[in-house]
Amino acid sequence: MIIVSNTSPLTNLAAIGQFPLLGSLYSGLLIAEGVWDELNGGGRYWPGRNEVAA
Image (tube, rainbow, N blue to C red; front, side):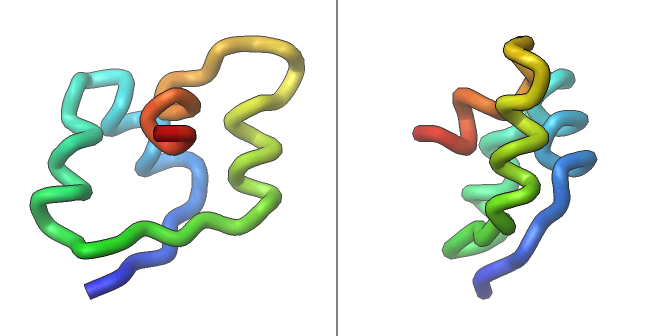
């Protein structure tokens, strides 16, 4: 199953070290361009940014 996610689940799972859980539950992850922009916003490092980039 492929899921579509907004920013909050990505950053929260990454912050607690559980981002890999998404890969074990789902075959794919889609995000909107706006979500990617939020993860790169303000020139800051946001949890989940590197995981999504990978």
